[in-house]
Image (cartoon, rainbow, N blue to C red; front, side, top):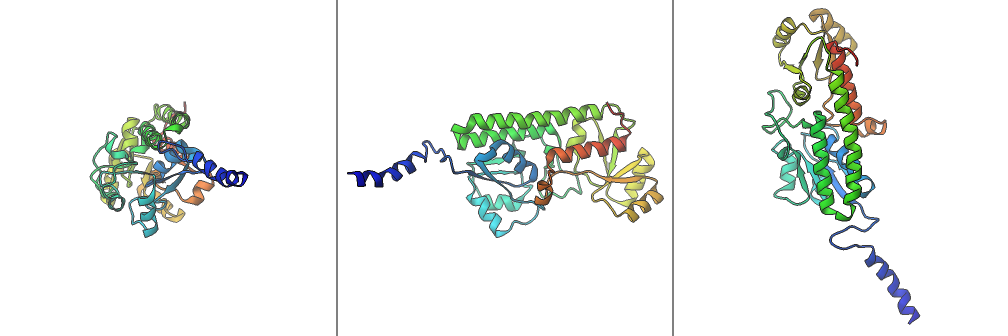
Length: 287
């Protein structure tokens, strides 16, 4: 009898750790794949130690997926993706999967993509550049995680609220920091910042050609022009000499390298740097 109890005990312990109603064992994590960095950060912030979060596109959110990443997408407990055709390879990998999938562009107010944006679908996907939209994404992530693991819903809610408090702080900093500026128009060869502009009452003047850039400079008299990539010092000086403007960049936060994340960079860091760049370009008085 004692020998039977000794053999049975590990089985009982194993079964007791499995939970009921689809709940995970305490030592098992939800595998969640996100297909753009801000979505990944939302998952990691809300899920905490209950999720193993994977950023499916750490370098190019709209590029090709490796076979290994396709397998991770298909095997994931939860996938958080853009939807609306913005990432066709992701859509193809998921097929008709409905459960455990958040397609954020399905649930947020969106606008049409601007010509020149590096996207495949008809919608501008950079919704998270409005911190209030990012907060709505966090809500959707919290809901889907709670659906999959309901006994952890209170913890997911607490983490979501904490992260959303940070987002509210970013929104407040932008509202105050861009309230008193000499100009409201910013000239950019990178047209991906319309959601940010709409949120804070700015006008993004998107230009594609050198002639359009020269015309925008003549019309709006900016002190700074935003480029897609920061040029070398020599090229920056050449632009300043020929056009009479400084050059800078804004970051969409759509991707972050593992090295940058390990160094502490994230959504909040990027948004803070973008605010500083806009304040300098628009001649804003600091609150």
